[in-house]
Image (tube, rainbow, N blue to C red):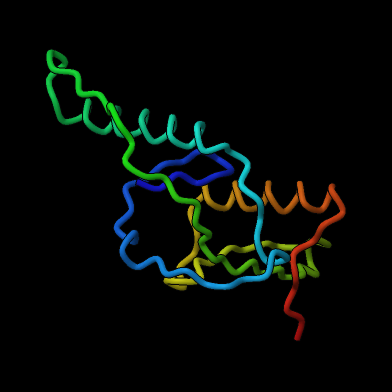
Length: 129
């Protein structure tokens, strides 16, 4: 189970065994917004809702114990495109593992994190042509 630390969106992830430790500079990382306890609560609620969809209301499962909780970072490409005919900037997000466009919840979470960092005076490293 993976919980996104800005929006609280939780999904069952099959990438757990593929996660490898890497050295990455702090300038490239967005800090988590949720605490470990909040992330665990989102995971519990999502699992409960998932179980309730496929079961009768008579037996209510409960997540009694979380065996481990690890913080990991998932890379995204943030693409800024100048829109001349609209006098603005279009921002697209791409999953750096799969190369696919990100969904609305991930996009919303990453953009909120970037806005917060900018307000704090921190800006992530950009790759310029």
